[in-house]
Image 1 (cartoon, rainbow, N blue to C red):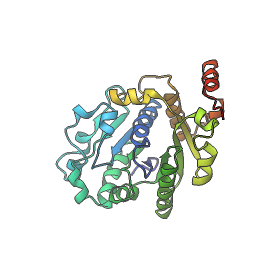
Image 2: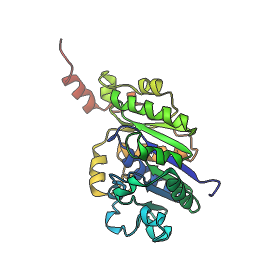
Image 3: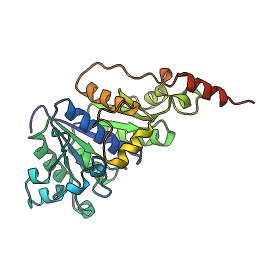
Image 4: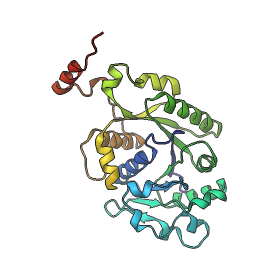
Length: 271
């Protein structure tokens, strides 16, 4: 294993909070910084990382064939045509869940670590065997959650399990942040979430319709120099991972244009 390889698990506990989207965009952003980056889809039951990267039609072999020694790692890796520093190792057949063990995941990650600067593991939702297998092979973790009570509670549970396994550092990404809802106290604030989870905040990702558009197209926002709010947030997270001192976005200062002020005025509740 290359001594400088960073193996990062991207997890949440709750499904649908943005793990795979973060993995895809962060992978592209790191690759654009010159880092050789592998993204590993560890969700063998419901793989989606290939779709978000637009690589679903180029898959020939998967992690399953690598473990079975039916192909070499290089044959299973799918390199991104527009960003050659990024490669995907696709998840195998869902039946892998029946026999995959922590040692198998460690073997896959060790192979990747010999060739890449970063290995990002897209963790399955929940805390069952898929999560346990993924945790066994990682060195550090990013917990992603949204400012919703149920998502934060699940994230708290996952953080406890990561601590039990001795994973460090564990950092937090808060996704789908809506400044106006925070301002009107209709959503948990950033301070609320960080106080509950007690993790260092790696980054915020603002709510952005372009995330849905890019996901459906199979083109991560960080791929094509998008200037959308979420693209800026993903790029900043990647730069912080590389040690840059990038200030966090202040939700209180976002969305303060004239149009937003007018809409807030029109939405003022009359009691």
